[in-house]
Amino acid sequence: MGIYVWGTGCGASELMAQGFRKESVTAFVDSFPSGGCFLGKPVLLPEEIPVSDCTLLIVTTRQAEEIAGRCARLGIPEERCLFLKNGVFLTDRNAASRRTADLLLGEELTGRLLPRHFTIPEPGQLRGGTLPVQELENDYVRLGTLELLCRRLEDVPGAVAELGVYRGRFARNINRLLPERTLYLFDSFEGFDPAAGAGEAMQAAHENTSVRQVLEALPFPEKAIVKPGFFPESLNGLEEIFCLVSLDVDFEGATLEGLRYFWPRLSPGGYLLLHDWGNPGLPGPGKALERYEAEAGERLPAVPIPDLNGTLVLCKSAGSTA
Ligand SMILES: C[S@@+](CC[C@H](N)C(=O)[O-])C[C@H]1O[C@@H](n2cnc3c(N)ncnc32)[C@H](O)[C@@H]1O
Image (cartoon, rainbow, N blue to C red; front, side, top):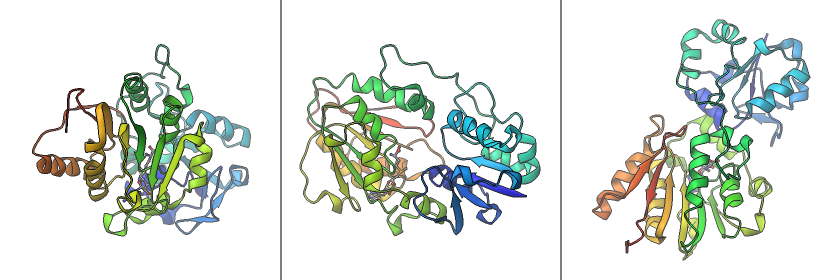
């Protein structure tokens, strides 16, 4: 009787943060294993899952549609697959597996992992939109907002940047939507600063990436300038102006440094997306904004959006000189 966990990234670390114990895992599964083991457990390719031993497969990544098809082809029955990231579908993919999960993991834990929160209908594409549905499925509100914001940047000068890139899932959409702009990508590529306070699973998940993996994810990699290393040291004196910045480093210290650097360099009419501002599991970004506003002596103009992690879109007003 084995419990297998599909994914060795953020979803897996969120699973542990909810109280799932790594000791319960028989093995992790990943289509692109970047090392033989994760949190001390083996990482298998999907084809290597021993189907008869797999009592429960917990899918922690967002490509539910694709993985459900793959599991069916591998002969893993629906009632053994629990999808943790299926919130954008009206159909509950876990209708058949929820009971098995309740029995194996306990109802309290499955209740935390799959709260009966609202679902939004299967995403339609925006009118005239260019992002493919597979991307929108990941976080419809976040990506739909990004696409609409990009439409307003035509006359706003500057490069684009992301601080906190991980595997480039959001960066590839910025790159796709703004193919003419230089894209600066800042990440340590070795997880969080040890002083930041990341737990073991979160740290391990975020070490699991590389510059190469990110560049391969981009549709226009020739526009990217990668700045590996811990921010703000990784700036190495960079002077630029920006029309759009995604700030997604999960913790207070690095977020504050990001605000100190990017907000004054954001062009009037530009946007800064502060990820996790409304995420109760990650209070750091919200606290960093409070500290930055206290330093600046002003409340920054912003609009919160109801995406999966509560992004705050900071808007530099077109007449601003800050
Ligand atoms: C949540 S992930 C980013 C996810 C990405 N924005 C996305 O949506 O696909 C956070 C990333 O921030 C990086 N990070 C955190 N603190 C950092 C710092 N001080 N300097 C550079 N990178 C940092 C981590 O290495 C991690 O890859």
